[in-house]
Structure formats: structure tokens, C-alpha cells
Image 1: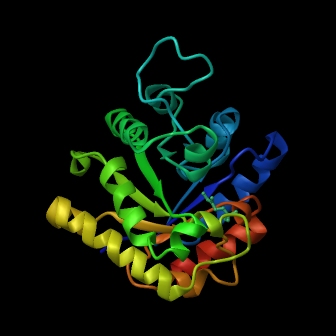
Image 2: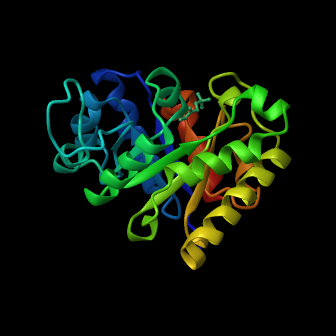
Length: 247
Ligand code: 13P
């Protein structure tokens, strides 16, 4: 019912030479037609990545919530759509942490993305101390309530669960913890949006690697992955795509 989706978040990495990786990833994607694959490189690489992607969706890592205006240094969703981007990540924990983005801002960005015709990947996730305090599900549920727009069924929304302590650390959440959290996210979406809530894809992110992807993809309600470090090279990203296609 829900196709697996594997998204690479390049963060502030990559350059024109690295676009050879996009070509190689796009080749592998063509050989795995049952899986949706996308790459979100830095803004400056979006257009040249599209030229290499052979139709594989390319997206951004953030957008502004307004359509235009005096917001020096920002990029809005219609600008992304105009150059051919198909998706945008909003509310990544690095945006929430380093740019102090609130749930309200993330919600506004998701709304702007959907209004511009982009798929919005809305990120949520708890800190290590919140998990240790037994508050992980409560924190993530509150983030969902604040960050997912009320009219979400009008657009293409994906939720990405990324426990902050697992990002870039090599520490992955256990399959049991991932299963518990994804079930809680699914319950929230169904309660709020009814049938539509069963269709939203929920990705796991946080140190997803070739050697742990298959077991994560086998967990209930894990509909794919949002991958950081291991999406930078085809050598590491392609095995993750292949693991998704075997599910
Ligand atoms: P890593 O895969 O490098 O842990 O990053 C995860 C992430 O933040 C993806 O958005």
C-alpha cells in the first residue's frame, strides 16, 4: 500500500564533482523500480543535480514559509518548484537547533511547500535526555501536533522520525524503539486525519547504513529512510536502496 521511500539529505556537503554520485544513484534507482528515491543536496546543487538525475526527484533541505519578500538569504517554495525541485525537508533537527525553528514555523513551511506543489518531509525527533526521561513519544507527538498542517490531506506529506542522538553518531535506535515510535506516529496521524493518516509514509533517520537498513525496513510502519552521511556516495547509498527494494 505504501511504497518505500529512501531520501538522501546531503546537508552542507557536496560540490559539482560530487554530482557523479547523483548519476550513479539514479542508475541504481532505475534498477529498483519498486522504491521511490530522492536526493536533497544544498540549494546550489539542486539545478545541476536535476540535470543528472534522469527523472529521480531532487529536493531542498529547507524553504521559507512566505512566497516572497524582504528575507535576505532565504529561498521560498515556489522558487524551488520553478527550477524543478519536487520535495523539501522541513523542521530537520539541525534547523530546529541551529536556527531556532519552532513547530509553528515548521508547520508554515510545510504548508508553503505543499501549496507550491512540493512534497514536504516533516522531521520530528527527541533528544537523548528526553528519551532517558521516558518522554520520547510525548515529545514527538507534541512536535507532530504542532508541525503537521491541519489540512495535511490536501498535500503530499511525509513524516521523518529522527532521534537526535542517533544523527551522525553511528548509534541507531533499536528496532523495538523505532517500531514503538512509528506506531505512535501512525496512531496520531490516523486519529487526526482518519483514512488519510494510514497513507502517509513515515521514514526513519539516524545513522542508517548499508548494514542496518534491511532490519529497519522490516519494522512495522517504517516506510523508508532519511539518510545523511551514507547518502553522499553511491557506494553506500545504493545498498540502502536495494535493501528497501527487497522488502
Ligand atoms: P545520518 O544518517 O548521518 O545519521 O543523518 C541523519 C539525518 O539527519 C538525515 O536527515
